[in-house]
Figure 1 (cartoon, rainbow, N blue to C red):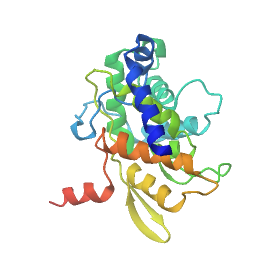
Figure 2: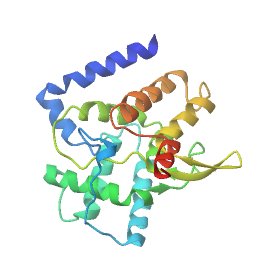
Figure 3: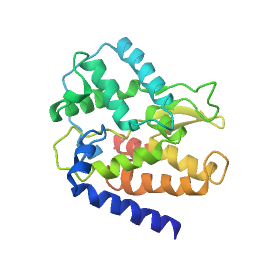
Figure 4: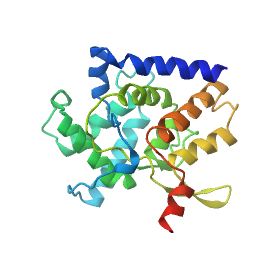
Length: 230
């Protein structure tokens, strides 16, 4: 019942994006407004891999330094950080739809480098893709709000890829893991622990089932790899 109530509340939040102020706010988010992960288009923009790795370290550091009082959402912070890298002469106030599309193209072209290392001062973090770091730091609620607010906006972006596969060791076994797999892992192994309480598990289920899988067509690693073998 709690999950149903939470889903209804978020659906109401999603529906109010017809209000001009909220539409304006939704436009600022990095996550694509009507994105489908199965329709990604290539972009010709190229960057030096060593530079991208250095940038990814800065991006992970910025996400990991978000404080509870932060006014910008995780998505907006990613937007600003990438814009500053690809267009250092522009300010965030100059962001246009064309630039948003360029930011998303940059992400899709380089997100394989967006790998965050575990932090000594944050014991609940572990090595993995930056999307996992957002969840590890319990920033999934603003992330969820961003996706709900943004997905109703009709634009023509380059959609974000939510299907990056990490190869990592879990319990001594090498596994392939997308962000959907990672949420599965949390729900199965960490439900009801001090790290992820019951309410947050509900929120992660909604993020996985209704947003990532339901709307953005995100997949588990096994689904992606089985298709690639066909």
